[in-house]
Image (cartoon, rainbow, N blue to C red; front, side, top):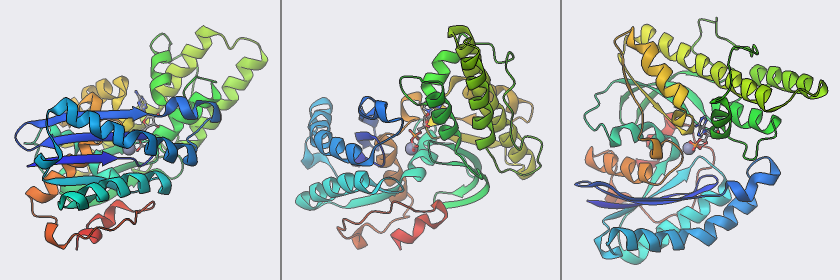
Length: 347
Ligand code: KG4
Ligand code: ZN
């Protein structure tokens, strides 16, 4: 089975082709960071316009690179939500028009389910149940995954998401691009022990998270360094390292508690923040003592991409969790959509 996937929930236009025999054949992404860079965040209208400009071009390139043609495609998968309405509508309209013209199914996929299942792309033998730590720009959740489509939230952020904490502190630091990858780059040369950035809710027995106090503490520290005119390349690197260490420590600690509390000895970490090298290394190291297996998506599939969307559709078909014959072409999208309600759309 060959599935063409589209992802356009925020500021990345993704087009990918997944084949059940060969895995991910092509995975193309156009990132819009440069377009939004001067605004300190994603501008929805600009994001939609750029999706329009890129989606057909990337689709053409995906076919050129793969040597496949539209006639080889069995189904099309696209992100229906959650995300920015305008951005979602571009992917949905494009995917469904293409599917309709080829008379093949158009399969709507929950963006977070795409992330959550992405570690299975390279580890299809991974067994249920497992714990999932989902850490993206908009979500931070710990879940028990009993099987595909059966997700119980056991902890989540009470305010900012982990990715958002990275993005907001990157902005406070005046970095070129407001994202965690920039903080991580700067942190390589920093010492995380020079500045103390708090770890909110670290000592609470709850599996919930809170990151807004961390951001405020970082802001106060940065302002103090700026007013003393010592916000130089050394202190910037040290602050970046401290912020990264605090966020990672919180994520690791809550994951550790989740494993201990549930007794489930497998954890998968997914979503854009799972690209963070310190998080990857520390998670492996810390959960070793609990004999817990830790899985991540391949690095290039950690942040938003269409391969995970095509793959999630493949798994839903494979395990009969979707009735392809009942799917109708429908342009509506779901900008807000709780993962616990993921199955409602397929009934
Ligand atoms: O999953 P994703 O690509 O998009 C959403 O669904 O939100 O996640 C984006 C988030 C951003 O907040 C970004 O700062 C963060 O992932 N991120 C990172 C790294 N790469 C991306 N955070 C820390 N370290 C990284 N290397
Ligand atoms: Zn995402």
